Image 1: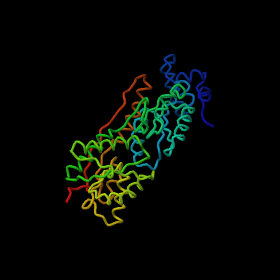
Image 2 (image 1 turned 120 degrees about the vertical axis):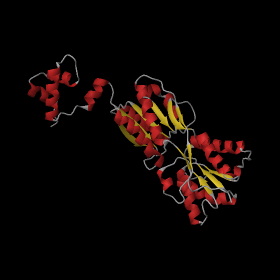
Image 3 (image 1 turned 180 degrees about the vertical axis):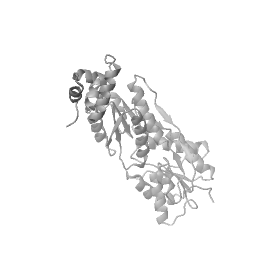
Image 4 (image 1 turned 180 degrees about the horizontal axis):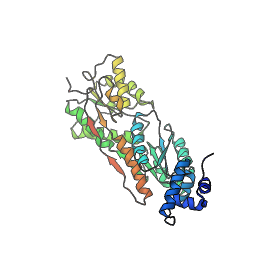
Amino acid sequence: MPITIKDIAKVAGVSHTTVSRALNGNPAISSETRQRIEKLAHDMGYVPSAVAQSLLARQTFTVGMVVTSIADPFISRVVEGVENIAQATNYSVFLATSYNNPEQEIKIVETLQRRRVDGIIVTSSKVGSIYSERQDQIQVPIVLVNNQEPGDYLYSVGVDDVNGARLAVEHLISLGHRQIGYIGTASRPNSNRHRFEGYRLALEQAGLAFDPALVFLPETMDDFRCGEAALSRCLAQRVTAVFCYNDVTAIGLLKACQRQHLAVPDQLSVIGFDNIEATLYVTPTLTTIHQPRRRMGEMAMTMLLNIFAGQSPQDKLLPGELVVRESTRPIN
């Protein structure tokens, strides 16, 4: 049986109230008594009740985190960043997956709220504005990471998709490419819209005409298959370079090129977005836009801690960074 405060009190020859006060650092208990009881508790293997502590502090020191899928390579570093700050501040993180299902996401948030978590972090939310509307019912702060729904929401951390995409396309233009395709996605509409905006902005600033025929939005929700499915249309439009919505889409395109014996980057330059670990292990290594994913997770957790402290933090929009590797080269 677990050792209780009453067990310690019996051995120490004091009341259980005295033991409780001593273990909680009550100044009414002398230093000598407190040290004796703390040593006795340690020697007996006493483990404080998390439930009792949360009732006393009116905090559970837990945070819920909703991710789209644990298989999403974007997510791992974000979770790592959240847990890095959480563990340093004695918070535990409960992880749940929504599988890109808005109804599932809402159910998970409601369940976490009933579990009395102190705050919630949601990645790639499809219903972000709902939480601001339902704040009175949810009653816990929610921070969104890479929110995917336009509208009003409370707190968010994201990357500057527009400028990141602009950097990607400007890189291709600087290499002499003029027939530049864009492979997007339907699974994350908000960031897709912003990255497409950056694509168009770069073309406009370079004096290049926008051609809708060079924009490819395959119907599949799977990023890898998006890249695979778009290759035939890219070739039909005689593109010399392609900016992909994310790295997984770009890797799908690379694999399709390999099957068709199309040399990258000699015959087609390819650039992605995210800088996931796999970009270093594909052939050729992938030029991409780096997202500071771990930093995003750290900032999301820090934002929650600031909210717990009664502050009203501002939304954070972090810059992307061009990482040049082997999949892009000057046009022949």
